Image 1: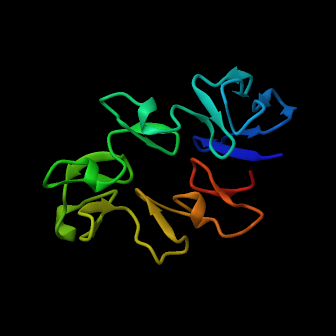
Image 2: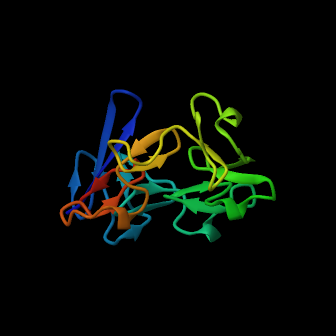
Length: 163
């Protein structure tokens, strides 16, 4: 049995679960399946046991405009290597932007310049939560960041969850 919590807006909350059907929210039989639904609506692409409804599971599922699959969504870039010279991948939008070289190059809502990557960030590591994802400090970026055996999966809201 696994659960994924998906936050949408300030108050909406939906949950999807694996290998069972509760509240019209089901996953199909396997870890990646196209028979799952969320809130009674069938997922348009596939279902991942760790992310819920996804648009992609690998880069080949994405088109030329957004060729990289990042946490189940097609994006322009996943890393700075995906961008042209003088540009880097900003983690909050997964868009290629002009690299920053100093804090003055950045503004709200992302005031911190990560000079190692050239990206403007809204948070810095070492805060209460260990990872930055765009302008938000989060629990995890990838499954490997989740070290508690009870919650080993990083979902698309960057929270460590049980499968």
